[in-house]
Image (cartoon, rainbow, N blue to C red; front, side, top):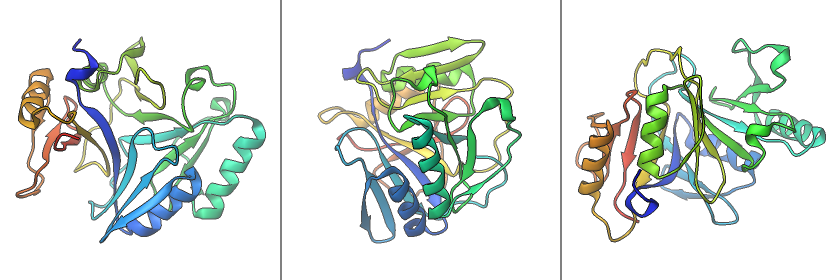
Amino acid sequence: MMGPEMTSNLCSVIFDARDPRTLASFWAGLLGWDITAEEDRFELVPRDGTGYHLGFDPGGEPRTGPNQIHFDLTSESREHEARTIALALELGARHIDIGQTPEEGHTVLADPEGNEFCVIPPGNNFLADTAFIGAINCDGTQAVGYFWSQALGWPLVWDQDEETAIQAPEGGSKMSWGGPPVAPKTGKNRLHLDIAPPRGTDQQAEVERLVALGAKRVDIGQGDVDWVVMADPDGNEFCVLTPR
């Protein structure tokens, strides 16, 4: 695997939103992140200034099923878990049933636009060394987990029974993929990743590296923009921004 200096950085997880302001306000209130706005686009920034951002863009296709990406939120205690759930409901979330069982123990909620997320009880060993967003949890294959490990330079921290997970060397949220069965893709994903090569490197060279790893360029009607829209080996869209 190439070293971190040869890989892109995860810049943002982007939500396509019917009402970007309202959705950004929900997540800002739940996570305690700062919110900024530029015209009709909103961005959340962690208050400690580290890690990826969350972006909320206008538009997006109607939901036709569960999202390919959802967040797993961690809990420091049972009291913290209860506060997170109560705050989410107060801000506009709702309980949903995606087939989870009581034995699984976690709470499944949807934000005001129906995007799923989970609140995980304390004591979860897999998420013990992570952030409040413990995992960016993805529906995907083992192969796509390997792809993202190489794309971001994040080492594998789990690879068993076709389930994979990666984490940045400095810690923070993990990214995980549940393996088969993977739901068929229908339309453009409502959440996607924005990544960027480091400043001083070449965007086109990074695109070519990602193609060699199994990605491809895709046209979603983006027109003449300074980022490159691609799809990972499972067909999930992501954007390669200019170096930064």
